[in-house]
Image (cartoon, rainbow, N blue to C red; front, side, top):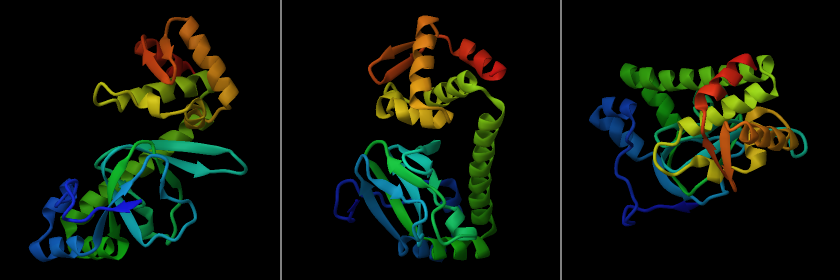
Length: 231
């Protein structure tokens, strides 16, 4: 992790999130005085599950993988963090630790914002609080959807949903699959890596996807949707 200073070419002056546009001048100054811009290199942790949390993060650019750490080498991926998202909001409201880990899939620039400053703004600015609560609810909804996938879908349905989810985040010609290992994909689906590899090959044999090293091209997303629903 490297701190980015105001004199650096890649320094960003403002936080480009809708909720911060509702701040009064003195409130904006509070945020500016409570934030530090940093660069996380690919493979570095943005947060560590169980670690003390004195700040939240706002991702400026780059992608990160959010996951729960299990026993041994078993993890479960919750989501891919994209630019414009907050990381660690639960630390503001109910805990002093990070409830999950997150690791940079690419180089990521982010603001570290002292959580006490966010808590102060939530208490005194209703529109800012509305924006933060909305983001928090979106994250909880995502978590419930993830739990539902584990409880009610079989392996092929889980993998189909995982492929559709990752593909939906491809906002440019650059595929996010190339930043994920087969184990990462298996951890999103909540299945073993061996099962993921077997199912991916079966999907390819059926003409649903194409495999190119780490990259995955969805040829028949509609069929994956059907597998997701049936699974």
